[in-house]
Structure formats: structure tokens, C-alpha cells
Amino acid sequence: NWSNILLVFVPAGILAPRLGCSDTVVFVLNCIAIVPLADVLCRATGAVSSHLGETTGALLNVTMGNATEVFIFHALLQRQYMIVRASLLGSIIVNILLVLGLALIAGELKCPGQKHNATATLMATVILSLTTVGLLIPVHITLSILKLSGSSAGVVLHLSRGISLVLVVLYFIYLYTQLRAPNTVYAPLATSTFKHLTSLPFFLKFIPPIALLTSTILLSLTSSLLVDTIDHVTTHTPLSKPTVGLIVLPLVGNAAELVSGIMFAGRGQMDLAFAVSIGSAIQIALFVTPVMVVLGWAMGREMGLGFGGFEVGVLEASVGVFAVLVGGRGDGGGGGWGKGLGLLGGYVGIA
Image (cartoon, rainbow, N blue to C red):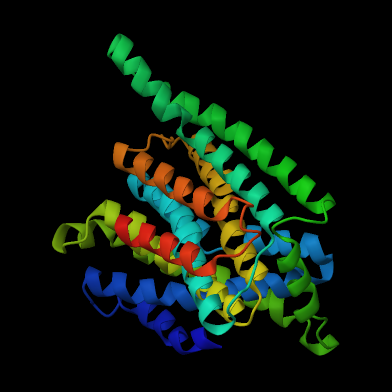
């Protein structure tokens, strides 16, 4: 596998602090180490979930096989709220603009004329758009309160917690509908998971669970070391915290989705590429983001949805570009070149 070569950076990143390496070196090594661990986590989760059935296994794979949650949780533990919020938004943007844009371009280069399931994509676009509205409600209400009374103490936090609870409930309703509906964005991913992750021989069945456990532990360790060095890196290098959170960490955490999307599209499996990118974006927006708020609430952390003006504008623009270029049904799921270049151009503009 392409990522196995990078596994040498895992012990290097873990040992770097003990060997007296600078925080910048530790940051770089652990950024690289997370990439192969994220891929192992994704593949191990898929192998473990393959016996659950097509749709259930695919949904479990999307929900659990994502490295983004791990380092975001460590940032939450260390009260790096700006990094948490920026990484969440960055992961959504990476999936709907960069991953999907490159997949569409790769698909046109390798297998011209591919089409995707326009109906499933439209429904996913609606869900993502509505979720974005929910995430940004606290910010817009707070701005209105500031104009009227000049004070917004605690308003964002209380609104964030209430809306997050609602979004978590909606996520489980969403999962339930996905399990029962035959024509969803996850359908091609479910078929692929069930088809290619077949039952292993008896003496090898213990390997996927061990790989899942090991990758989770190592990913947690490297993520912790990575988060520990963010303050030093943003102080002593040109990188700022918004840049690290919005660009660097999402690229690292979603590298597996990026490569998978390009590979699927290059093989003529455009629906699979859409399932990987859009499924991950919905999961982060509708589940991971509100769960981080709820977890912060439970741990006494003041983690809310108080996104800054730039973050709000970036998220609204990204979802808007995605909805206009990909969400419509007028082209019947075609037009790969134009869509891909438009999505990729949007991401480059943000970065």
C-alpha cells in the first residue's frame, strides 16, 4: 500500500521528543506519521465492519474510520478551541472541495464521461447545507444581540450546546434513514466494502481488530505530540494557528480520503469517490462538530460554535460553491471537468 512507506515516521515522531529534537521537527514528523496511521485506521475499520452487512458496515467505516476526530479531541483536551473549530471546518472544506475536485479531474483524465448519482448527491447536498445553517446559527444570533444590547456573554456557548444536542439527535436519525434507504450516497461505498473486504481465513481474523486497536493507540499518541507543539510552531514559524487548523491538520487527517477518492475516480468508480468525500464531510459537520461541543461541556471546557467572521465566510462560500457545482441535477451527474476545476479553484482560493 502507498502509505506503508510512511510508517517509518511513526517511531521517528514518537521518539523525537525523547531524542531532544525541536518542537518544529516533532510537529513535522508527527504530521507525516498521522497520514499512514489514518490509512491503516480506515482500512482496519472497514475490515472489522465488513461482516455487519453492506450499509451498516459502510456507515461504521465512515463514522469510525476517520483520523480527524483523534487529534481534534486532543486539541480539545488542551483547550485549543481555535484549532478545534478551524480543523473541523477545514476537514469539511477539504472533503467537499479538494478531495472531490481532484477526484473529478482524475476521473476525466482516466475515464472521460463518467457520471455520478445525481439524486443521492442532491440529497447529501441538502443535508450538508442544512447542517451548515445549524452550525452557524449561534454566530448570527450573537451578532444580532451585539447590535441590540452590546453584550453576548455566554450566549454563544449556551446556544452552541443546545444546537449541538439537536444535531447529534439528527445524526442518528440520519443514520437510521441511511440504513433503510436503498439509494443513498453511501450505497456504492457499502457495496464496495462488502464486495472487497471478504471474510478472512480463521487464523487471520484477529488481524483487523489488532490493527484497529494498534492504529488507534499510535494515532492518539502521535496526535498528542502534534498538538503539544502547535504553540511553538505558530510562534517560531510563519504558520499561524488558523493556517495550521484550517489547512495543515485537515490535509494530514484526510490524506487517506484524498488518495482514495482519486484512485476510485481513476478506476471509473465515481460514485465511490463521491461517497468517500461527501460522506466524510457530512459526518464531520453533523456528528463530530456537535460531539466535540458536547464533550467539552461534559469536561468543563468552554468549547462552542463561536466561529470567527473569516471562518463563517469560508464555510458558507465552500458549501455554496459545492451546492451550485455538484448539488444540481440539471446535468444528470456529468460535467466532470468544469465541476472539478471549480471545486479545486475554490479550495486554492481559500488556502
